[in-house]
Image (cartoon, helix red, strand yellow):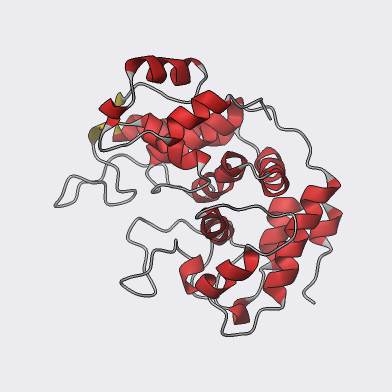
Length: 270
């Protein structure tokens, strides 16, 4: 992974979508030169879809999976972010803007034409979260991933991920993402500050590793923006929102993502 500029990252993380002017021009240009911040762009829905498709074609599952494991062991939230974007793009339909009664596409929720704050999207990427599933978001996540030189994960990275799987496999049947969240944070060697543990579980849902028979991950089928939620107050992503301990770990998805890592593909529930 490329060396991160601490000053540029600090500027990015302080960026406020609602008050972008709080970031000085000098700071913005500094972070921009470091590849952390971007000028807003005006883009159409159809160009966004094409951009996302192009980045997906250039991306590779192997590199995304390696980056994810590096992000697990090295506490690199941005390295884990592409897994969700790649999963959503796996069955993302190539389509033109489909009008609804509102201004958003009925298939992917992006507007027909809009000014997009790429800096805010990148800020969310650096937190390890997927901010919406609009094609322009997926495109930037994958573009940044494609630009990275990804090293092979160390044995320790793989072991920490297997520790996560071990923990999940021993959960009681009534376990929910919320209760699992507290346990995940206690795994030795896994450092997930703030909400990053939640974003990790969200990602495992997108990837199909944590899913249910009725609510599957995006590697199996594309689900539009009107995804169901378990409750009105839930802030969990689909489909992990519906996961419980009785659903366990989906071994098929593990094989899809991590077939190059025998310790993961040979892993079995305790």
